[in-house]
Length: 335
Image (cartoon, rainbow, N blue to C red; front, side):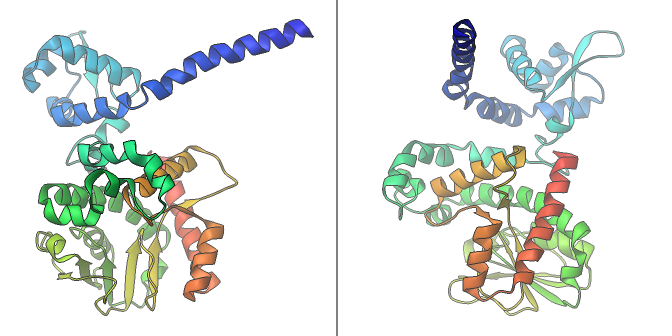
């Protein structure tokens, strides 16, 4: 018995020795993936049309083979790229479903979101997370940069543009499953205002699916001033806390406001299901706490309380749950 306990303790300590390194170097995966996006590795392999050798890849990217080999070795170990022989039998690199997400202009690209979250402006606030916990009314972003993330984006157009591009990635992931799984929420609508619509990607996807809709892309003036021109969509600048353009329905993605008929698209933390998706949402909750002072991810129970306080019916909560089920199914299939 005593020997068994000693062995269990020894095995536990050995596992701790492995696990602790995840926290020492946990940031490295994101940074190396960012490097791959900046170099355009996925695009280079895709345009090559077949497995590409190290020599061919380094020549295409204009970099030395030695450091590139080390980057590719790391990325292959993470399962982002894979090894495959080319037509001459030489070892090369090939794409995977995951690496396709790193292409800046791919259909399912998440490159802009990775570049945003790994940018110096969003990485620095993480070092002030404890200050955010001690002062609940101040975000880590404000501690690091002296102003909130939206004010900073107004005076730093390049960062604001990166936010818009990242939100466009997010829109594709969330809105497509809603279109296929809950099309009935758009029945009887002729107009739709997307509150905080960024560059209009969400409305572009929706109007393609429901061409009878007239869209209003509503966001801060500096955001809509550079928004994409889309047929059937009017770009309107303003402040949602003062007024929102009138439409048959308001679409609030990751935002909640009490407006007539509202279509809410948001992630929900299922307390009873601890899985990979829940891990993502818990990470998102930490990101919201770090970058905004009031933002948070909510459980279905918390949504019920919020909606009840705002005067929404239980049907709204059921709709959220239904949309979330579709989103989970989408993630399970494609991520």
